[in-house]
Image 1 (cartoon, one colour):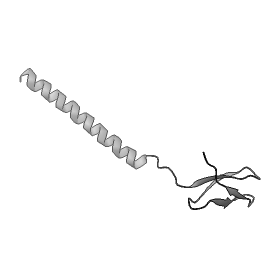
Image 2 (tube, rainbow, N blue to C red; image 1 turned 60 degrees about the vertical axis):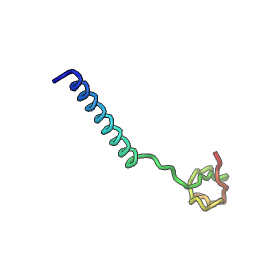
Image 3 (tube, rainbow, N blue to C red; image 1 turned 180 degrees about the horizontal axis):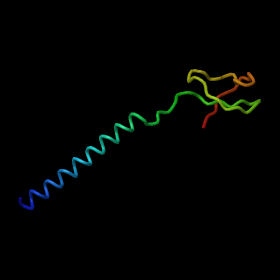
Image 4 (cartoon, rainbow, N blue to C red; image 1 turned 90 degrees about the vertical axis):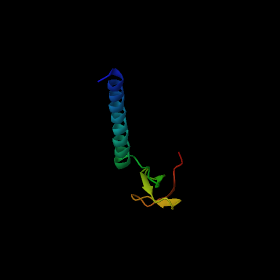
Length: 74
């Protein structure tokens, strides 16, 4: 076996290993990756409780005290 063949074989194995690692990494990211929620965050002005509600709601009632609150903008 010549040196050129041996070097090509080693480079090919390393490239296949990197390709396999990238594929597994991308698969794991898709399965367990963070997907941000579309819910809005609210903070009660009366009891200071922080909670979330559906994205189509602009004002929401506090689940603890019933106070209507506006959503928080970050």
